[in-house]
Amino acid sequence: MIRTRYLTRRATAVAATGAAAIILAACVGSGDSSTGHDGHSGGSSPASTSTSSSQKRHNAADVAFAQGMIPHHRQAVEMADLAPGRVQSAEVKKLAADIKKAQDPEIRTLSGWLSAWGEQVPAAGTDHSMHGNSGMMPPEDMRKLKKASGAAFDTAFMQMMIGHHEGAVSMARTEQADGSYAPAKKMAGRIVSSQTTEIQQMNELLDNR
Image (cartoon, rainbow, N blue to C red):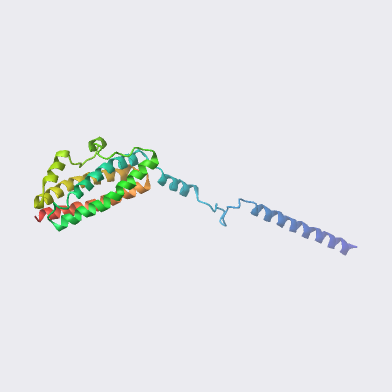
């Protein structure tokens, strides 16, 4: 009889322990299915989501950069287009071709951003001074460049393009400091790097004339 009571109590205790283990396992596994092994959500963290979102947003500085750089680039391309048939130096001819090759696609990219943002794309022939652009050539300087040829063209082209590039670099640095749209800030960085290099190249060519 005593042995029977002992076995009964032991069986009851084992059953209670097993039930407790099952309840505990259920509680541990009842969390969100997206939770990882370390207890953190398996999806993107709020911080990473916020950073990704901020890189896709634009602000007023991005709009000003795009609206200002489009006519600025257009004038540089216009100047570069004058080189064939007028230029004397092979270095200046290549420089003009490189400027056109780099800035034509950027004009299209900048225009695409403005259209996507619902902002006005500057029309061709827009008065450049309306955009507060620095380094822009006034119409009379452009007329003089069109009339020049040979060594005189090379010198005038480089002198004017140095000032033009300096204005673009200034605008790009403002975008780097104040903009929020990651692709625009990346383009601004390329402009600072490439045009600073071209300014140095043109200064060296002028010094050696």
